[in-house]
Length: 122
Image (cartoon, rainbow, N blue to C red; front, side):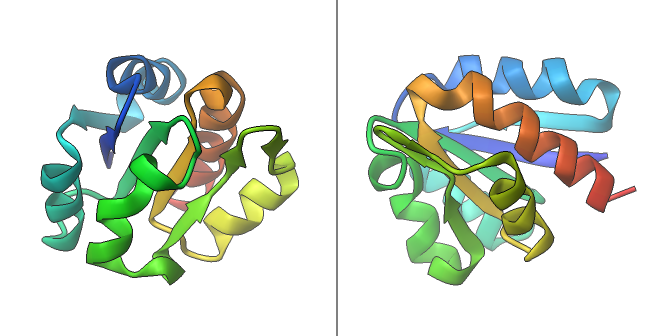
């Protein structure tokens, strides 16, 4: 079972619901404040981090970038710019642990990230 923590600035409950919807019994999801979510990742108490904000990289990922380092994080969408499904899959395959995106794009990117995470962690 994948342990996923949801941080970010907005739509945390909605992001968690999307993860649960697409991950079913293969995921365990916890919603936390940004700092608590980042600390959860730093302390290896969760496998992955998802966060949403209005820019996709600022409030969505700032704390987790500070704790895990930029190489472990990926901004998969920004206003007017969503990574292709293939590029998102490449980010997962590259070992990224934290994913940030705009709240507006959550319905598009969360299913792709989660599908690839589940494939990579079978």
